[in-house]
Amino acid sequence: MNTSLHSTAQRANRPELDIAQLLGPAAWQQLSPAIRRRFAAGHASVCYEGAMQLRASVVGRVFSVLAGLMGSPLAASRQGEVPTQVNVRGDGAGGVIWERQLGTAGTEGSQFVRSTKRIGANGGLEECTDGGLSMGLEVCVEDGALVFYSRRYFLLLGNWRLPVPALFTPGTCRVEHRDEGPGRFRFTLDMNHPLWGHTFHQTGVFNDPLES
Image (spheres, rainbow, N blue to C red):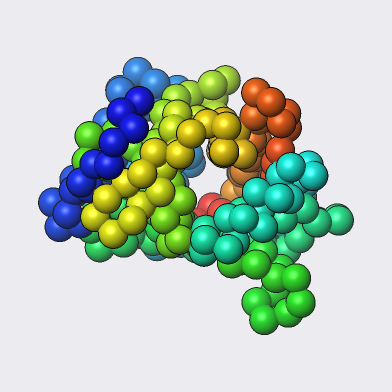
């Protein structure tokens, strides 16, 4: 990885996020029609409701606190299932915003997490938080599920990006979107570090209002 600072592409020049194009026709067709609809380019705004189980190791909790200080939240560990609302909408510049409200907004312990999936300056997929903590992503299909893997972390500082050494990250992030029957899907996130081990685990089932 080039450890120098790189200028980012201007928002207005970004191409539209197209997961089907990134996967290729053969892999895209391995997904269910419902998953293809949820991740189709230019799809309408939607709100999913469900509940999440959130777990973090001791090291994961440290990363959660440090990320929060930078304005880039990582969901902390919770006991039991946490009511969760996920809003998905376009950002007006080719990307897709994912807003996750963990717990009831305004109540003690609630948390708001927002990130944007978009095409980066190098033409690859990336996910960026409001605070600047970002990941380069690889997308693939595994056993009928849509899966994202982090391949590098970086901080966005204005129009520049600063690579983050792997040692100082919560580990490789794997996110899976899997159908759970008509109108339902499961979201699962795991982070594993070669030294710190399993730092984060999040999973939950959500209802799709477009199939209810």
